Image 1 (cartoon, rainbow, N blue to C red):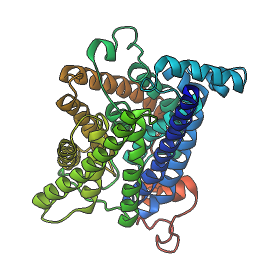
Image 2 (cartoon, rainbow, N blue to C red; image 1 turned 135 degrees about the vertical axis):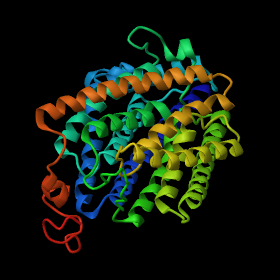
Image 3 (cartoon, one colour; image 1 turned 120 degrees about the vertical axis):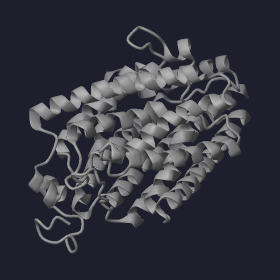
Image 4 (cartoon, rainbow, N blue to C red; image 1 turned 60 degrees about the horizontal axis):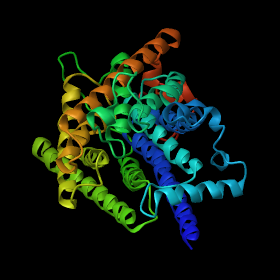
Length: 432
């Protein structure tokens, strides 16, 4: 009877990982729709191409070497079939032995293949953050080359120091020495992606016409706000898998309840982010700014990601609301600094990602503000330096920015040779 229960737990936890991973994979569609809605129509095909390609690159690079760097999973996942067992019977015996050792309420026991699937979609999420920030002026193939480095080396090494429990260049352990805690990746995924984006944006420069000679900021509206809204709701839905899957276990009462609370808190934080961002926007601009509301939702989600398991629903709403307020001020501040981010990714995932890390000790006694700061600084320093060097080398080899003429025509034509809306965008050189 006991073995049958263990087998059921293994099946349930493995299936749970796969379903949560599929939800996170759907976030790729959310990022694609969000970015396609917030760029100009002449750059839509190119941004969609980036999102499709980066997902494929992330899946391949992480399979080849990234998972091995992060979790010692083997180059090319060489031992992942049957979790390294000789046959199905041996796998069953191993699982039952591990389950008996863990006990019914102990550590989760699941298929390594399901773990890889769940992890790889997180890698793609980190890279998706970069895509929107460098939109409308970056060469497609320069972006793809960076994606290879980011998903095969930069992110996995940082992930090894955190979720992989490795030491930072042999100097210190974020978990053991500082108690760093990041439940689902406010720092590990979101801050990392935003930091890589920031390094690229600083080398890339702003879009033509974004900033005037006297420091004025010129708005460049997105072409399709309905699409951006759809993308936000897709991301909101996918986030339940992002945070809910990070509980890592479903097959007992305590963990099932934990998953439910994570879902509840994730949703509450997103709602808080929307309300706060909308109120702040109304106070500053006198209007209800939809783009700020959308970024407020995402900011609330990023803010709660570091610790969705410990707050009360009210506290989760407050954490999300602070994230929603922060993102409005951050977007305005970056514009004043002439850091051009067409979709607000650096603010949503970077600035609010840091807030998410700092919010953890408010409800988690096992975390400290000092430990969270050390973790945030470690992630930022590594990813920024490694990304800046990578972007710079790519710039020297092949260039990272399209020509001024190509930017005016739109990257759809120069990079992809086709327009997303050929009936409406006008002829070549329209600049619309």
